[in-house]
Image (cartoon, rainbow, N blue to C red; front, side, top):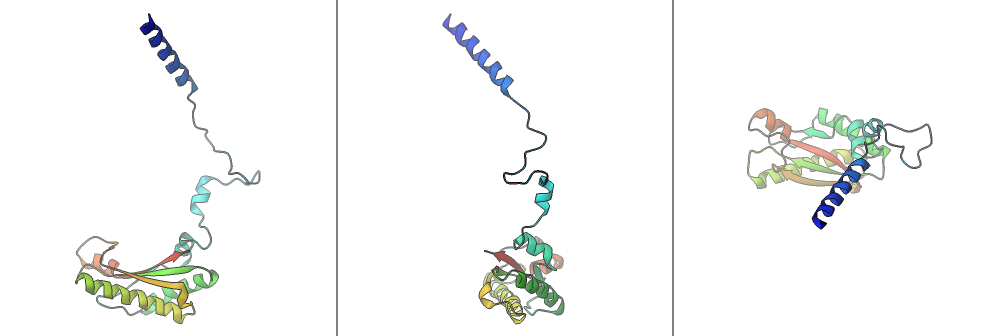
Length: 170
C-alpha cells in the first residue's frame, strides 16, 4: 500500500509542477530607473555604441586597421588618412588609451615576424604622436604571424594579415 501511495504522491506533484509552468512575457519591463514612456527596445540598445567604447571607436573612425606592403612598415597616404581619423577620435576622448597591435603574414620566421609586427605598431604609434596624440596614451604589442585574420596561403590572405590594429583600452 505504501508503494501505491508513493506513486500517487509523485504523480500528483508532477501534475502540480507542470501546471505552474508559464510562458515568457512577450515584452520585458523597462530597466529600473528608466522614465515612463522612454523605454527603449532591446534592438535600440544593441545598435547604440557607448561613447568612448571600442564599438564607438570602430563606428567613428575610417578604420581601426592600416595595411602594409610585404616586408614594409612605412605609413602611406591612405594609412595616414585612417590614422588622422583615429587621432581626431582620440582628441574627443583625452582620457582613453589605446594599444596598437602589429601583425605580419605567415611567411618568414617567427622572430622576423615579431620584429616586423613591432616596427609596424611603432610606425602607427609614431604617426599618431606626430598628429598630437600623447605617446603615454599609446601602447604597442606585436603578434607577428600568430593572430591572422585571414587563413590562407595566397596573396589576398597575406595582404589582409600585414596590418596594425588600434584597440581602445581603459
